[in-house]
Structures are given as structure tokens and as C-alpha cells.
Length: 422
Image (cartoon, rainbow, N blue to C red; front, side):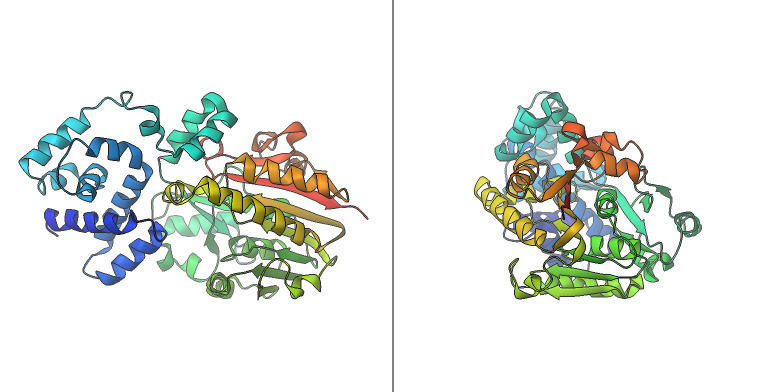
């Protein structure tokens, strides 16, 4: 495709996405459906350009002020993910001169917001929490996330799948913490790989795998994934249960649960029961009160731990939205806790980096529910033989699981564990 036409396409895609009316991945998917003339490499370049701009939006907007022409075109030039000589062929002489001046700006010259590229509502709490470690996190969030797979132990062993992927030309190494995980080099077309087609592997971040591990669901138990979504953790839990017992996948979105069905079909699991509920106080929840051995609450959250994958989230959230989320998180956790039987385990988790969605919710729940005894995540991680169990956790006595992109290479995750007293 002609360089000018491809740059025009990047500009139009950015114009749509920067309205922030829909998630960026949904905007890109719709754009590609409407423009089927783009091949795989062109779609990849368009998507990479979009995500480069979303990651460095504050810096690029500052640099764009010195240029001319449509704002989205200037941003597309700055974030263009293709070869530089290909891009230059699409630019006028004034644009080439402007881009050269932008390239010459020393990395340390921009103001702090233009270097970390985070909104104030997110940068402030993270800086207060991390101190000097804030900058390594900010740098990590500006890069892409790795591609992690979870091996379905019902279908294959990790070493076997690793060898099979290698034979298909895909380099995959064991994840450093999860015994189920493989980290893939690059972005191969997994949908065409037999291991994926037959359900031997699923795409799942290593941190998400660790949450399922900490639930420690066992054969024959009654278990609930309270906010199951598309079911990544549900599938991991069902495999850990060796396809026995009964595993409920609850969610208020029937649409998200529909996305679980093809994955469930590939997995070979028959112990999973998806249930769409109206809200956390649904009558179907009440009927199961006090009957569950394990309950995972992967609560709705800001998603700030997934900014490497979804950089638009930092521009689509607000302090008001966070306050509303905190109220929802507390309500969902309290309702899910009613399912747990005496002696059973409750796990509250988010993919957020913010204490207001994590420690604050867990501590408030503990203060209001004396019948739930906190379980130190570090002790449980060590019992499960996870490498560097203490390094995965934070708080007094390793109370909470705390995963960070810059420290652990995973998405950002939090988890708190309790056991209900008899």
C-alpha cells in the first residue's frame, strides 16, 4: 500500500479511537471490518500506531503543538509503527523538518507528565505508593505486554506443549512463577496452531494464572468464580479441579459469558456451569449461600494493571468513576462472601494498581466480617511452592499478593485471601 494511504488510514483510526467512546480494541476491530483491503501486516501496523499514541499521548500531544495540519495526522506521524523511510515518503517537506526536530528532543527534556504519560488521578497515588520505584513502573507501562499461555493440564503437560510449539516455529519459555505458563516470543497466529485449536493452551497472563492457583480449588469441591467474564480464570480453576466437582461461572453480562462457550468447548471441561445473574444479590446467589468451598471475586476495577495491553483505559477513567467502582467492589465482595461455607476460602482480586481498589477494600471487608480470618498470601504462595513467594507479596507478613509489571513481568494484580470460621 502507498505510504500516504497508510498514513491516512492511521489518521482516521486515531480520529475514531481518540473520541474515547468505545474501547480502543473494539474501535480497531470495527475499522478493520469496514476496511477489508488491509492485510495482516497493515492491520498490525495500524494497531501498533494506535497503541503507541495511546501510550504516549501526553508527550505526543505536546510535541504536536509545534507542527501543522490535522491533530490526528500529527499524532499518527509521531506514533507511526512502520519503517522511518516508509513514513518519510508520505510526508511533505515541512512535515519532515518538523519530525526531525521532534526526534532531536532529548528524552530528559519534557516535563514529568510528558515522560510518564499518566493522568494526574493515576500518577499521584502511584507515586505516593512507590516512591522512586514509580519511574520504573511508568517506563514498563509504556511498553507492550508479553504473550503468556496457560497449559491445560487436562490435555497436555507443559514440556510437551513447549516442544510442540517449537516444532511449529514458536519459541515459548516457562513462565518464572506459574507452573502452568509459557511465555511466547513475538505475536504468532496462535489460532492456527494445533495446540490452541484442540484446547491444550489458552492465552492468559501469568498473573491471572497465579490468582487461580491461590484459590487452590480441589477435586470434588463446590467453587464459584463470581465475576467470571470471558472465563480465563474459570478455565484454569476447572482444570485445577481435574474436571470434577461443580464450578459456577457467575457474571452480570450474558454477552461475556457467551464468549466463554467456545473456550469451554476447547478445554474439555464438563464441570463448569455459566450463570448470568442480574446483580450480586440475585436469588440464584442466595440459594447457594454457605455452600461453596472456594469463591473467587475478580472484581470490576479500573484495569490500571493492564495498561500495557489497554492503554486507552487511563484516558477513559476518572476519579468519579473510581469512587463508583470502590462502592461496587465492596458490595460485590460482601455478597460473594455469603456463598462461602465454614472452613471455605474467599479470594478478592483486581487487575488494578491502586490501593483504593485493593488494600482499602480488603481491610474494610475484614473489619466488617470477623468470621473471615485473613490468610497471608505469602504463606499460601510458599505452600503452593511458587518461586520467590515473599517477593510476590506485600503488607505485614506478606498479607497480600501484589504483582507489578516492572518487578514481575506480569500485569498488575492484587489478591487478598480469607478463610471463613465455623
